[in-house]
Length: 143
Image (cartoon, rainbow, N blue to C red; front, side):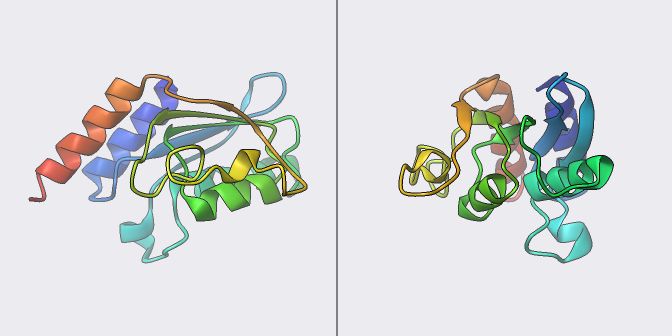
């Protein structure tokens, strides 16, 4: 989470919503990192989770990230939750809850929905205060 928080700070400094993500393999080695890049790339899908999973998939040479853990500073949205399942990510660790668009327990719970063929283990609220503070500071500066 420490590395993801650093990536989130980088995103905020670049003018994007401060969210960072890291993918680790089963042994705990970092195989992908990402931060929000929507403003930089003008790509609506460039959320930190997607960027990190793309890098991880390229690193292992496969779209299948089974056995991997995704660590992200903010509860994933519906798009990212769907991508987590499509990539077969085994575990999701996130920091701050997203009461407006969260899809891992706040508004929806896509990654643990028993109606879907894939699910992920979830560890929520890790260093949530720090992740929330980054987001609060970012949005307060824009009001």
